[in-house]
Image (cartoon, rainbow, N blue to C red; front, side, top):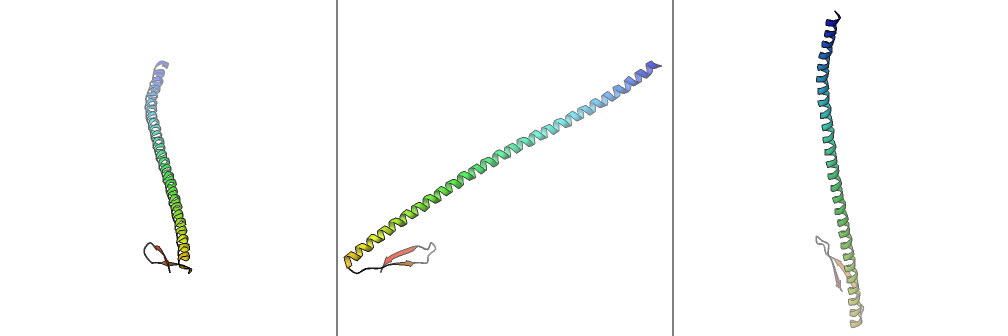
Length: 122
């Protein structure tokens, strides 16, 4: 009597072990899928982070280049204005010396799209 009971217990544990192994297999597959998904998400996140970093680096380089160009243009304009003022003063002093009558320098603004300034002696 104990022998068939033992076989039935073994049989039931065998059936449980089959189900457990199937459950284990499903659990392993699910765990692998979760791990694969996590790995894929981390790869995508790292790729996005690299792209964002490279874009922000490129943006910073462009901003620096633009600021340097603006500063260079500003300095060129300032130098040109300085040179023009010196030339105007020289011309003014030459005109005053030659005529004996002091001439005044007037400033006339023409209304164009660029608002160019025209200097003329009167």
